[in-house]
Length: 592
Image (tube, rainbow, N blue to C red; front, side, top):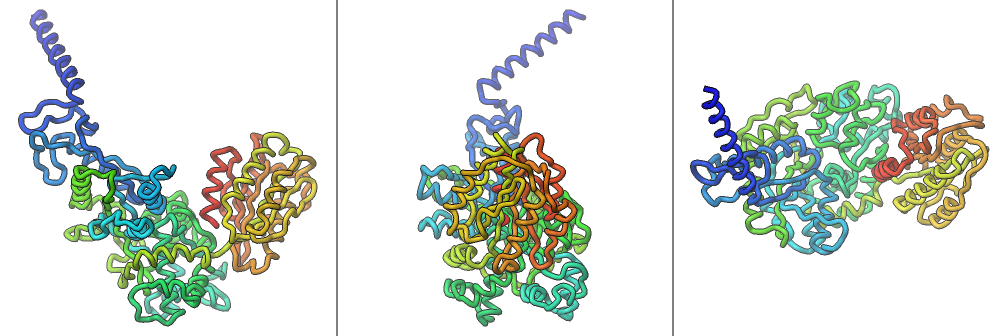
């Protein structure tokens, strides 16, 4: 009996060895009764698979990752993911890879790949899936080539751009508007009201705090800026009946002046929507409203942000109209996409548009493109959205108009006054001083020329090295003074922050500009007359709040003091190491 069992055991082992050899010799393939062989690990990439790639907007990650995995695994099982049929003998599998990236960044990478292929920043995806079709249209316009056949870009997930506003504030606007629809005109009315929010029955801060993202990087930022131009053309230029923006309207001085009024409500900008989802969740004291995709508002109300919102955010669908973000799949007509890859990319597009995937799209807070799927949760009033809105959709302008609106941003955006405050006390001697000097020079490398800047250094006393002035006028002098910094003496940290605030407050037109302090220090105050408690009043400017970015140097840095200073403006202290400095510059580039 034992001998028979041993023979059976050896027979099983032998079969397993043969199978392993077969797998290794055929690229993880096992025979099937019909059609192509199936994979022992169906989710692995077969050696003979046709690979395609996709770069998609970051908000799509929640449904794209499982969609790609399911698509690949189904092919690995020898089944066509769209038709559900067994693959025929010789039919090639498809394997898709992908990652998220900001639409504006990818669009520039594709432009580079077309007209400057040796550039360090190039992107060559098989599928480009931005949030909105503005970007492939811009690629065509800026390359002068039909890189994308726009009528062949197919939507995969729908989301209107909304104004996420606190429920109490929207209710106040609706009451003042006697129940009529609310839009940009009404938001602007709060800014110009004699007593601001107080005239609408809202206590506390009277002025309006608004935010939107960078229109060169973010789809929401670009669509929001376009919507501001539409609204301004309607109200400032008297173009009530126009259907589309034109280059002439974008360049109209009255229209640009109107957009500046909208931008005057800005507390600060942000590079990507990801950051604003966290910022706005801090509550009405931080921002009154912010431009988001509808799915982002749902995300916040579902309690998925770091901060738990103190009240419900609701979607304001502006009465003047808004844009739909359709998250299109666009296949470039370029030499890096073969005919076989184009066919495979079309198949993957069909798969993402299928009812099975579209159900997961809706679960993620996007409206499905499959009209057979009835809108259900999370499209409910409890999460701040209205499935019957938006009532008015803005016409997508031509690519030359989109490009003109982007270019105009530097002229209509809210500019910044910045105090660069650097600790040159004895405790900063050595590596700390060298690192701070390098960081300051890098900061100057990235500062937009339209902003104004002052340089303040401090040890026992506070020294105004350079008065507040346009950066382009004083850049050379600033760089010389940063290079000459030497460390000695005590540390009047709190006095330096107070002095920087005074410089920014007294600047010409300070109330109409973003005010910010960039502080490089180890945080060890020793001689200040100003107390830390006194500093808490500085960031609470009613008309124009102060933003403070604190960078900590050294393992002995007084993190507690620096963090208290940073928290005055709801920011966080940043480490002065290389990774921290990189975070700082990303943060600053979005705020200003």
